[in-house]
Length: 75
Image (cartoon, rainbow, N blue to C red; front, side, top):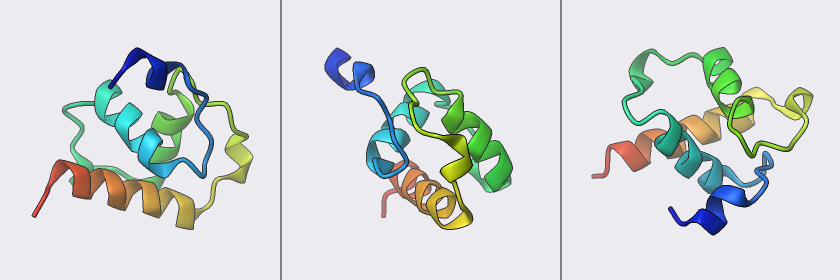
């Protein structure tokens, strides 16, 4: 990931960019045991996360989880 991407603010609608930042910050994360609450905590702890945590919902978190899982486990 380039430096320019790491400086960009992250918002809930930037799911793929959030996943890239999660992969960089948590490269050894065990996604099998990751709850949506823990995912929320990890996303909002990202250095460039700039959105309102209260806007998160299960659909957004599930989409982030699915994308992260698929990025880590390509077919």
